[in-house]
Image 1 (tube, helix red, strand yellow):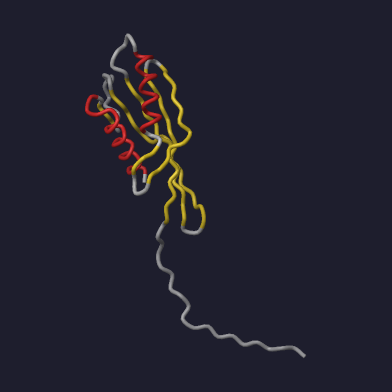
Image 2: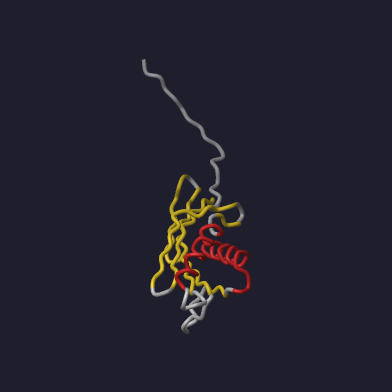
Length: 141
């Protein structure tokens, strides 16, 4: 599930920003040169909702490294507004809405996070049904 969410986020970013911005899902080990995005899922949880229905809770973190050091705050503010719009809905099997969006700028880098809660059904092993049942009842008195 996490991989599908990250792929959908990557697709949404690529659609909004095009090839001018690199998108990474793994750390490169080098000092990043902007403009680029780093996406990851630092928090994930899964719990049973009802019966075979489960909810997958995914917090997605998007870091944006701006291109210009001179106007990086202004650039980050513009990117923040575009992120809120393009990541509100993800196109997966069915549309998934992002909630709890927030962003902050620290050390010249935009840190944006959004939560995606996705309901799904787990298919379990088929349990054999009872073939025949008989019962006897006695009445007292």
